[in-house]
Image (tube, rainbow, N blue to C red; front, side, top):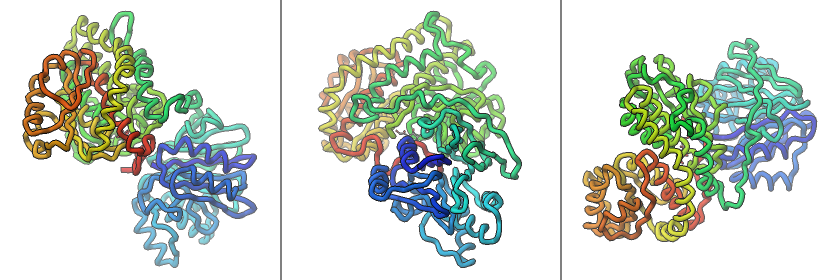
Length: 608
Ligand code: F6R
């Protein structure tokens, strides 16, 4: 949700700021802007739409200046117009903001009563207006910043420059992440370390409530009371990541095909492949002492959690409470102190997931985090961190992070079962062998199903609605299939438990709505086939995703049957993810949507 960057430099910054914004475009891409200080004046260029438009604007109207801030926006308050694009200016103050100022309306009324006029519909403008007012009232820059921070509530990562100070950026954090980069004679600020990776790998993360004065050579960091605080400078590994599409048309395609490789890395961290055991030292929670598990996440990560719930209940015999984080955080769930809590988040910054984590922490629970970004806030606030090692995921629709989350959850569930004595050493060996086979099977599936998925996608791209059905772990997978399709192709899709079909959705079945049934030949197969019969009897068109045994066992006529290899139940969700990802991807490609940056979405959701 919005990306911000800043540079206090020794040479012109505008081009470098835009370069850093490109690495943050996953956080929002409906408008962008950059501002610098030049000869005692603030200058800015802003543009509606993708960053490319801002670059074009800057080519036509270059921006000089050795200090500057920049922003890529995901609109919360006010339409994504150029006028509402950041940086916002008021009387010598420029501000970029990620988050929501919750009391903006009260502050705005107060400022308007005092004679202020507002130029935008954004919540952010109150920050610039407040700072300008405090300056007019006679406060210095530092005092004005401190006063403003005491006045605003909500979530913010802020960067501020003043026209009368060509050598300082002020920054503040309450909620969304903010990293300070230490260069040689230059200093940097960004929403994450990847944005700063071309400039420096020496990074300090602001903590919640911190604010900072960043000069050309160093940064002074304070807590909300104004007391100086130290934040360690760490060496970030972000620079090591290659962030390009390789030979693929889209990041999403590249990330789908990367899955066998990244899952091998992830498994390498959790599994002892010589002994065929889960590496107990990687399971940082003592599951022998835990009586239940609370799980919370959003979107695709939540659906990974739902699949994990089936595994923890089955293999570790642990009752699991799983909910979307936006509900979990407000449900006032009575939690036992003997429970552990697990939060799943690719970015590690999702606001609702973080709030759920803090709720559980306040309740005294042991906190584990399944994250991709190890330096993220969720990782830093957890007792045990379970990295999914997927590498940067740039496509907004999650693919490789999902299957890596699943792989890690599977390993943890087996490890928990082993620790609790509900999985025998022989069963552990058997399950681990299946996990170890997964990357090879994934590669062969990816190589074989592509042409079929492409031609099926051509058919799907003509539809208005699609229903996905599954039972057991294939139920959350059905929801994930529907989520993937709707978010990148904009075709309406729903995922249902196959057994729920007759309780409502069956009314939708006709010859126009394809029903995608995900059914490996597992314990639920016969029952799912009965539900397919119900669809067929009503003229529904079935796309059947099954395995060799399932294809042989089912006698039903389908619109198409995708046959995957027979695999064990523990790895079926990861293998069956591949056709649903490819189907969504190729459908979106046929429809010509912006696959990597679908409309209205952002990769990192740091507001509720
Ligand atoms: C969908 C998708 C989102 C994210 C969700 C949580 O493809 O990617 O639904 O899964 O926004 O994000 P993280 O995992 O960063 O907490």
